[in-house]
Length: 326
Ligand SMILES: [Zn+2]
Ligand SMILES: [Zn+2]
Image (spheres, rainbow, N blue to C red):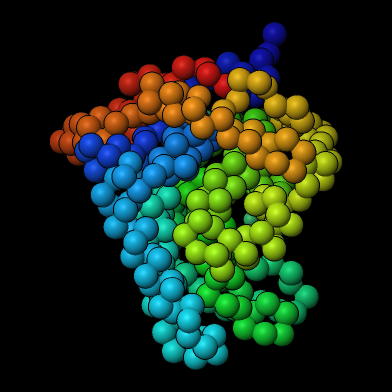
């Protein structure tokens, strides 16, 4: 009997990294290598509800510099900021957000950061587009400069920037094997809303954390998400859109898995109605047990480069996937 697409495949996914204060090394992530939920868990555990004393030195430097740069420029007249050095300010803030939240792995994948004005009928605030490249993924991030007829404040622009960086990070490093694609509705929902449970979990944690750095940022996050810190359609709408896509995919023979409405109690980060819940204690213990350390990372980079290979390859896959916790 023929198996369904993806079912007979034995893909060993790489173990993602977590920041470790004692080593203070930025890990080198492998492109398209991690299961979405593993990647989300390790990334969230690296910044969420961590006191300054427990951050890595480079995270702490990035946080302090972000706050200083943001406060300095948020005080300026918005019109003046837009007319002069907005592009430089946004690039600097992107680099600092990247170091703190995404292991410094996003900035070099951004081909262009475009500050633009979308046409009036377009309701988007930003856009993350993956470019057609051969080996290294590249993205253009576009940010709408306006809110209605007025210019966007720096806090509103940073809100959109963080959102699009979260898309970039997940698209660049999440596995695209047939098994993961079949499960896409339960992860990124890349083929439908783009805001599946994995996107929502990471985006929620990043907004909650960044909101604590400056009240103007928190206000924007709260306003835009109706107080939930969740981006995108409600769970009910996601379910409807995912089911419609699944039916269509089934008719095309793709066999997408059904959208899981009621999350398993074993999940460490999960969506419930319009809430994201993070079980911080279990998440930390899980990540401590399963994440790859930067020392492993240095080993992989050295051995792969010494053998003339690329960083994205099977080397890391031989180091076994994380236990099936979720
Ligand atoms: Zn996969
Ligand atoms: Zn989005």
